Image 1: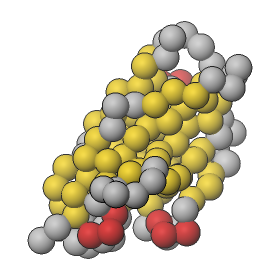
Image 2 (image 1 turned 30 degrees about the vertical axis):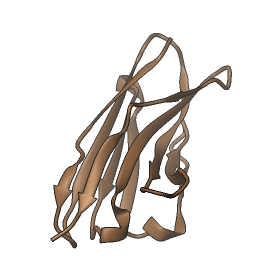
Image 3 (image 1 turned 90 degrees about the horizontal axis):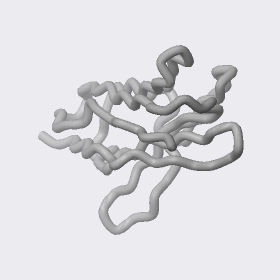
Length: 115
């Protein structure tokens, strides 16, 4: 069983920065990790994904502003969010996939971008 514990959400002004962290507990191999988000009234969408080999994929809306990284030794994934916009406001969910292709989700952390 894997548990994902997120931290780092909050309220920030437009143009500001936040860093999200997600630590995966458990003694299994985590392959893919990443972040999704869901804004009110919208479907959950991919933000960024990183493989165990550090290959990355970003949503077009965050390219050049967000950076995903991971520490494999700690089974932790990070999302550095810069130049935040009001449209980035959402609940951000950590995601992980293990070696048997089972998906795991965090409980979500609120990010609000507002002046």
